[in-house]
Amino acid sequence: MDEPISLDKDRYELVKTIVAAMYQRLVETVITDIKSLPDNCRQSGDDSKLKDVWEEFKYEIQREQSILFFAYEDTIQRICARQVAELDRERQQLLWLWSDGYYDWNDEDDKIPWGEMVTDALAKELYDRVCSVANNEELAIDPDEERDRERHEEDMRLDRLQSEPDKDDSTEGDSMSGPDE
Image (cartoon, rainbow, N blue to C red; front, side, top):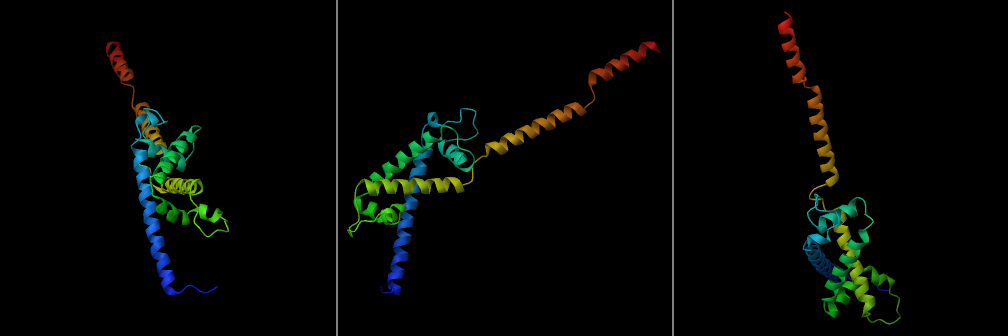
């Protein structure tokens, strides 16, 4: 097999950059859609420090998944599938070439496939990329750290209360010593 010439390598890198930008735009659109989900889609409750579904999803990806994590997965996978479905066929095929689905393809035909094989692989690729962002993006607020901080502040407040002399005891002692003298 002939070694690719420099121009082919340059072209490959340029196309790779364009595809990466296309995926990034899709990921940003999915995250925007997740952030715009209504409050009733949140699972952590009204008293949660996490402000939206995206923050809850990031927390569960980074820390510990709740038993209801499948609801996040299902919702976000549907958002990803919707974004993929909105792409025209050529964009889907181009993005598919840079997905794990391409490596699973072993058709003897040199034509790029079309249909569910492509859209399912793209939706999975997009979901995986969204999960990667969720795993690496800093939490706006860390409920674990916030809870620890609140506990520490409460402990400090209780320590101060215990270390202060009881004002009632000192007042009683003064009034009792007065008449006996």
